[in-house]
Image (cartoon, rainbow, N blue to C red):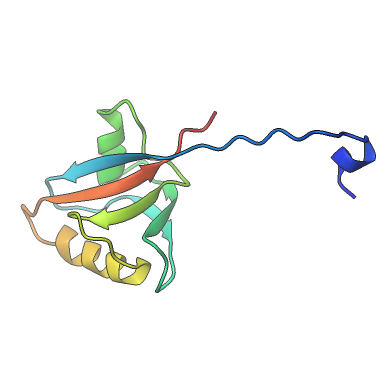
Length: 111
């Protein structure tokens, strides 16, 4: 039994938060610097952690909204892909010098 039920609480407060879509434009070759979770058919890729070195850490340093664990990459250059397909396409595009890519990321503000 939960502690709320034991204490006889008769109300529960639930906070619902809608994500903000951030567009991250990357214009150089390199690693994203992310640990990610996905499945072959998942809707995009969930960011598990942002590493201190990488393109996303560089982007975070110059933008007020920070890409963070729990955010979800939902599109690559405006195209929605399943998790495994998106990861494969990211590897190809990030490996080519001078190739610009735009990531659409659902960002959740943590209160």
